[in-house]
Length: 337
Image (cartoon, rainbow, N blue to C red; front, side, top):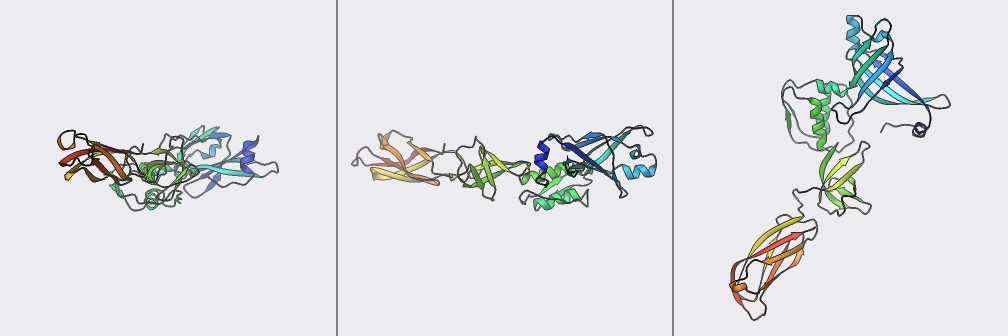
């Protein structure tokens, strides 16, 4: 969040006189304060370019009348700020964004003049790839390269973990800003998948890569090893709605069949290893899947149960009833539900 004084937020919540500032940065290096009577900066999360601007009531001098005027005006940038006036006569402003000036309209002799623009990521979006473009390596470097390809003097500040992104390639005429968003999603700029490393006592979990995430009400029984979806707010806080439905390293239900053989015995055992380790010790339900011949009236149970497996134990109804069995199927179901 943009740093403000201790007076700003309380003043903003009170009845106050708003203050606005619009600066025009022309392409020839001039910075021109613009008088204005109104305007707006709508934000639409559903759009690729989320912020647009409108500034009304500007002087007619911003309408280009010559070729030189057009060169210095079209492609210029608007820096719009909004703030408050304190009772002691001082003011405090917070920037609402920097926008590319896309259009100015109005009567060049009498006005009024209206300026419209889009946030400067539109410069990146409009600078389509002219040859296949490949990004790889670390996230921050990849995003910085994509942005500076179109805006060489851009300062790129990251507030998300820097992680490896793998290799990605976009075709000719691809949208570079869409590429930036795709790369950013890898690190959780919007959301990503993580593995629980620690379950904390304050309704949070810590992921294996060190992010503390608050649990939503739907995530009732967290466990180490859970694969979860995490999302980050605009203020940088992390939250999770719960466990991923499936994924490597964690399944809530597993089943299988073990084959058991013995000779002249009244009991037999077989060690079973789960295909995927559970994050915690599961419940195991074995079944002797035969009732004929050598195992008629035999019983089956599980012991030595742990996250990685268990031992199936089958036994005759009396210890003197010895038999011989070959490849007798023992079915099992294990679950953490």
